[in-house]
Length: 109
Image (cartoon, rainbow, N blue to C red; front, side, top):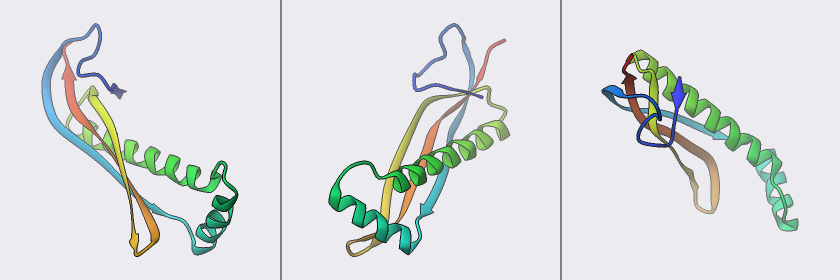
């Protein structure tokens, strides 16, 4: 599956626009992971555990979006983007949500 952030595919013509496609991933760390992350944040620097969680959420969201595009018969997803947010109660952010989205298209032969 071809993914592009542009609104076209260089060298190809879009034959059919199939519609918007989405992939969503919601992830959380354990309470221990969150506690250790808060300790590390006091010293500053890279937050490896959180980076790994976000990277995995992005990968899962993209895989889900591709599955949806393939079900429509798409050759590519154009205008591909990510959106993300955190969710929680009070000052505690328990979960992150990542959405991958774009427009599924069928390319001309």
